[in-house]
Amino acid sequence: MDTHRPYPTIEQVVNVARTRIQVTDNELGEARARRAALARALHIAFPGSRHYFNGSIAHGDALTPLTDVDLGIVVPNPLGLYGPGKKGPSDLQEHAANIIRRELADQYPDLRIEFRDRKRSILIRFRDPIRPGQPDFTADVIIAIDNPSADGLYIPRFTKWDRSHPEKHTQLIADANTRTHSVFARTIRLLKHWNRMNGRTLCTWNIKALALDAGLADGALITAMRTWFDYAIISLQQGETRDPAHVSDKPISLNATRAEVLRRLRDASARLEKAAELDQAGFPVLACKELADMFNDEHMLPSPSRADVLREGARFYNAPARTFGAPALITSTPRPTTTPVRSWGLR
Image (cartoon, rainbow, N blue to C red):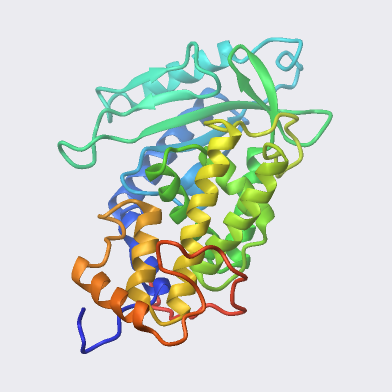
């Protein structure tokens, strides 16, 4: 360990880590350009429609490499031909696919569009990577109609319709980002990456829906993550997550058994709590090691060197007034009233 400066706090470490996984400016610019091109094509296909943006780009929590971009088009339905018990979305999706293909073919000559036998979206494969040799991101387009008798929209579910409110979802997240000065989006980005590297037992929307109800606040990212894990464990013990817009009557499905989801959440929460305790007690190297083990990604958050861990481990074991056990055995204790925070002013 560098003896000329103190080892960084876990708040500093996690702030640097989040910059390594956030979407790049090139990806962001290209995603917005392609999303806008799709929106223009959809307005040609459906005059008088309105579009909305959702997903990670719209929510401010996209990871790199970017995997997809999301948007929806709300199609006029003045005669009430479409909806539950009426016509399904298939012919609207086919019309949209044809117009997108026509309008974007010159710019993306290898364009591929899939919509048959898909649950919700039209899948757009641009087949034009931003960087040669790298995978390209796709686009998911939702064809929706207004619900004339209640809040929200009808969106496709194969050949039928489901109730949802993606426009309100995006507004709820925008409000949370404003209220927390982007701590919400930064926390979601970290949680999405943790989930990606540890089994993907939760879908991204479940992470966000839980966060909307967890009461994340402006402040330290470590504190926000601890708040999310505490709430997620309690909430999922009681049942699957409900729609935060209170429109869909279906809860958000888990990607694994509830027991497995809760096991992974508890394991991560315990490591995060242990990291916070060690950090506050003055053992930042051991704290960083716990955080690195939690995220399980040496590129995003590398572990401290073995020499640093051994050196601080020896100091830990020789400390005269330890109030908790060995780093590998520490269990969760009541959290301190404050968490040491130092802002680096990073995006």
